[in-house]
Length: 454
Ligand code: NAD
Image (tube, rainbow, N blue to C red):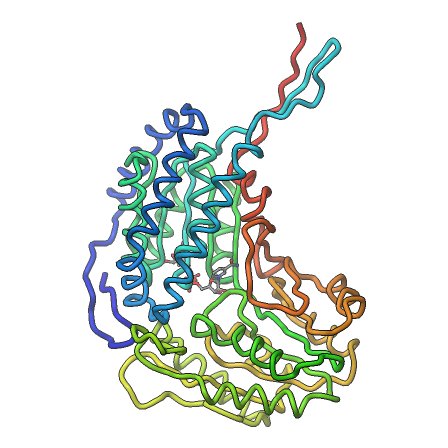
């Protein structure tokens, strides 16, 4: 399997993909290793993770450079991702023991009752490339702390990072029979689905997630899916600083080259401030610096996958053919690599693919609305349900909308953010199950009820 640098199109490395035999061997190794790992006191398991937390900091220059080289993320954003991942790990280090210890329900009388939290066993994490540290840590860390063994399949677009994570876990003292990485593409993912694992934790597209859920269903084991989104942002007429909101919204669109599950993918603006908002947004978008992601001042690097450039251009063409106006961007810049210009469109509507299908790039449509009711109707006009943002001076007005939206996360005067203390979950086509927060600690264990008489 060739690992390509998306900024230069050079081959960085060639790796050997797993086959049925190596996958079976990895599974048997983990199956044998998991009971001893689960038998360790939780403090010991957490101590290994604390070592890993330190190593991520010590090795951050090399890790950030590797991440940028294979996914094209601007270097500063690779550092930000590593810092963000460490914050999540710290949350798990600090909070897991509290949520995994035995819970006494009845301590007196003829029958005492308690709940114990036991590991699932050997679980798979089939993962995405856009934030390999963040989405990886959401699963790997609580799974290991909970006493599970993990078969980790990094995306084929972030495999060098996946292997670096594995190496640091081993250096932290996590045994090889507790954590294994499977190198390969979708067919290797399919091989993992055919193993008799005790849980499947997936991050990726709706299409793959749905097919995984269908294949895992007959096993009757937990299957969690963190999938895509078409996340809306609504700007009300009462905001005070239009420029500030425009800048925040733009960052929500283009951060990580627009390749975030919770990126702002469509914007609705109240008609009273529409023109001023669009002016400010476009002015800032035109200033974004496209360049080599290794350079410190680059804001927009290449897309990670070659095919995504044509996909976005086709969304832009479709919108233009149906009457949209391109205010900036719309093309591939003249340079090597999988680049696309940040693109802003107006005169858009929901007949256009751009406004309904996940873009996953620095491209956005801004639509005018006449009131909150129209904004709510449009925000809800989607199969996805990951996040939604509302900008307003009035909390009451924003809260009314936030309560009505069918998404796992809502934002008031912020967007495109994730917090370790809060549950991360998508609804409908955005996923099933929860990571992060205490619920994301409990997602990797199963309760056992003890009825104790005598
Ligand atoms: P993808 O679905 O193409 O691939 C994800 C993983 O699944 C990869 O490891 C891939 O090799 C594997 N895979 C592909 N086909 C498979 C199959 N048939 N069986 C088993 N495994 C298979 O997604 P991607 O391009 O890596 O990620 C982008 C998507 O992920 C976007 O839709 C994005 O919104 C979503 N995402 C969601 C979250 C979240 O937290 N909700 C976070 C990050 C990314």
